[in-house]
Image 1 (cartoon, rainbow, N blue to C red):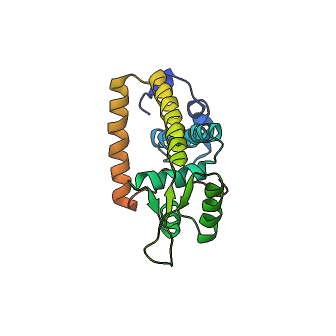
Image 2 (image 1 turned 45 degrees about the horizontal axis):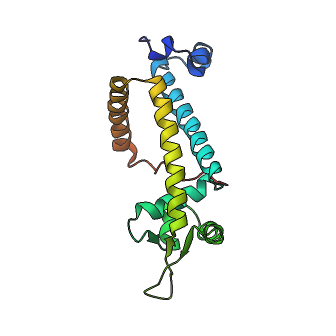
Length: 186
């Protein structure tokens, strides 16, 4: 196995990998297994940043994801409930509950409809303010964490390496799901 950056900076994967590899079928590449384990754990830990930033704004990660879909839609920041449900991978019942909660909180409001069948939901000024505050918290925390672990050149190399891996995986499996799809129950 090639020397890993993790060897200089102990982490939970590096600490447990020799024992784990010993339990795996023969032929498992320890370097690939270590990279896969680290990527998965990092992704799960980034969820904690989202939860912390959302919690400080008294919303769930799922609420934030819905606000993010509206914000990404561009002015006037609106989508139909079906479009929201499709973007978030949620059922119509789940999106209805989420939209009701966000409406009661004053973060979204019904928008004028061109037809009576599907009235769009629009991000309110308060929703935009809250989304911006939560997003600023998230990005500052991520910047702090990345900056304490990697210098600028290392971050550039990491992005290049991850980009190559993501591109290859997407060739094989199609586009990756959006990073902001909430977990069930969030």
